[in-house]
Length: 568
Image (cartoon, rainbow, N blue to C red; front, side, top):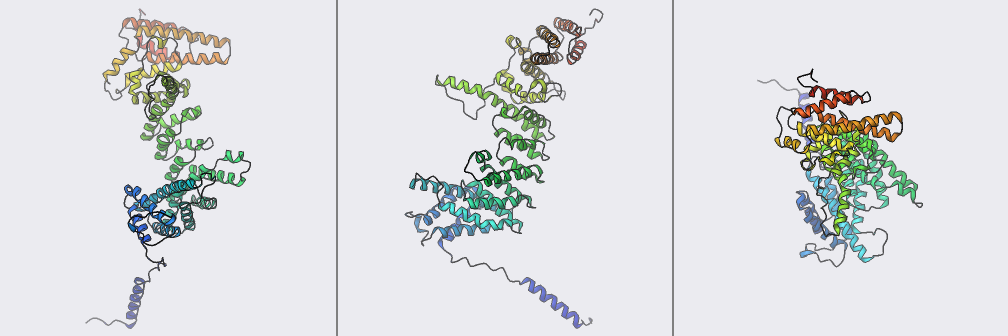
């Protein structure tokens, strides 16, 4: 027989059950009165509902929502098949759109349906704004200010509704409100000035939000705001407000600080790709080549720099650093992006001017111009200019970044490998760039594919025999350049003129490149071996021969020294 339960225990259990029951049956949140259900509400909800399913149907949904807007905002519009039986005003349409937007705010970031609706809203506002402007311009062609249109009113009401929600305690609502606001800023061309300043101030507070996704959306919107303010124009305009200039610069300064110090890599990467590009901002963008995040570094080399324009506007220091940092990056994808930038984008910039001149000459002959996205034909002049722009005399020494860059160039541009040739005219007046092309081409053909013991493609070996001079002929060419170097060294010792010293440095670089080539030759040809051996002995006897050249000469002597050492 079970023991009896005390009265106090029964009372406690009953109290616990009552508390749990009260907790489970707590009253639901009251939904505010949204008015009667109308055909307009059903139609707008249907369109927004379709937009969240897939982006493929957004174009059709934009057209459908625009027809509803025209039926509410403009007169004499035939609405299809009488779907909208009642008469509605623009305010009714705006209220229904805002009602749908409010439903998005509680959608979590991980839910793609919310992103689709936000994208649809931006597409609709952009399209509807363009059509409203066409109607307004047709009605008043002489208007100088931006007209008040139904879409501009709707945009202002949406931003005004979202403004207090940007500082909500709920991180999901803050994220969606910031996302929608930033997306609208990027979608429309004009905003009311008062709303613009309110949105700017609210977004500037969000760039310090504790949630990285909120900061990401805030900097995305402020990137467009910073691009809209031109400090130079503000200063030149005598009637401008001084506060506007300070506001624009303040936004830019804060964004640059976020670019340097934000702990979230996606925030820094978004700013990198969305900040306006000018001479003040560019150094901050380029220093992201040393960012801790590999994806951010890759975005710089793969997306920003190719879209930057002609690389020759960058300073020599920036060009050298970008190549060195990119080609020696620990991330393989960054190295590949840098190599692709060098051999595809920068060479095209160097080939652009000759291509334009050729196109002008061919206009009279009725020839078609090259499409903008088509690569220019291989050009030795373009390659020489590219090497000159990266200062090959300083960057092409042993361990220099130009050697790595040219190896990547030959590997990625087989059209240049087939195109380049070394006839007698090539060697007549050797510049540092020409000598460097010959040296790197020779090394690429002799070492490509042989790093792991593979004998390499036979085609490249055949190119060496076909394009480069034989050892005996090369010995005479090297002798001529060595004599030029010794003359330049003597002239530099007698006269301290800068031009003479520069000529000496260039002659020394040319001889070094040819000596590096000589280290890779096959000296099975006895005539060529004797010629090179005699030349090296003669060069080594000159005390004025530079130190690096002397070191290379000694190494070549070891290669060319015959078995009968006493006879030589």
